[in-house]
Length: 488
Image (tube, rainbow, N blue to C red; front, top):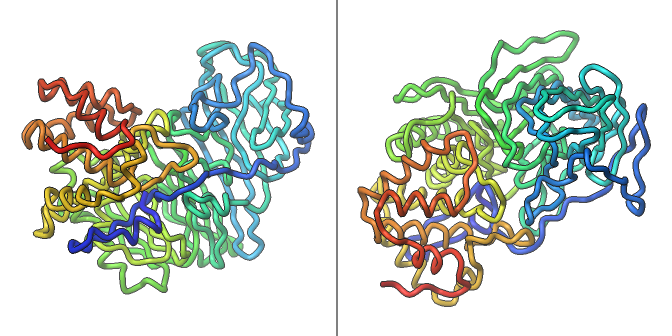
């Protein structure tokens, strides 16, 4: 991701603008905790009277110490089927989410992350289930015990006006954001719950089907590829999309509105989908062409492109950031330059295909994507990665030296250190082990953990195995110490 502050970061004389899909800033990301009403199965629980939990209840959080209530325990989601309708005039989102999951323990009750909305019905295995609301938790009581390792399906019917996360000091506003002609949907880090019930943490990736109905004349864009042409009836059009590769919940989108669309295939044979709001119509061809060119190039540097299509969307919402939504990075209210597109498309490997297991390792996404900006500049005859490294390192008073990027903080998750100091760490590694080992490592990393999750410790272990060097001191200095490292 790239954010407003990163969008205006300049490396002195290099004047390189960095705009990433996840934004660095200073402050806490705190989603509102009020829940919508619950009907047909139970009432919203009082915040002062938390539900009692038993040994067969799934935990209300997945276990990430940075975000203790994000995600949920007791089960693993394999697939989401989202059948939703959205009306921009009334801002009403309504429909159902069918979630196919597997119990990882004996499970009598479990949580889904959901912020707001009125829930009208919940079924488990086709049978009516009781439910209650506890803050942003939708607590579902199964009709009968779900035994460990058993697959099960839960379906939630809900409706309401989406309430995005607002005034976050990390990103400002994110989640499902209503716009005059549709919706701008960017959910990092925990905004998926503002539009569908989910296990909202990147460690539980799943595949997705989207069936999105909007007023005729509005386009609905989601991840992956369209499985059938749009169908219009009664003044409404339904778009069907499928993301067949595992995806973290924060990368899912249903961006809607008036769009000009261009589709085709990159020179390397990858399908391309580019869309722009009419205000940015003049940028459509450049977005399409650069997306195709950069995706093809990254496939030679990082290994084969991990998904079935690539693309990008420019919407007329002044978000001040871009987000690497899987297969379709979303640019909020600006025309991205090649460096920003390079950053967001690098995320398709680093962050989307290989995802973090815990948010404290976010540099594995942002440091890599920022370094990709440097590599793209080097590739296209601009400043070299070495020049960018030297220039950034020369700023002795930068606040990034007091922030250890290997331990990203929940209250300041997208700090510039996670981006720039993360990139500096990668260049220091490249200097230490040489280009052959470094670029071999990048391809090995993306291949080994493709469609999965990984940690910093796993990256360090792979770097040491690939290079045959002890790299503990290097990574400790660049990732874990709140001081400016000394160059060797």
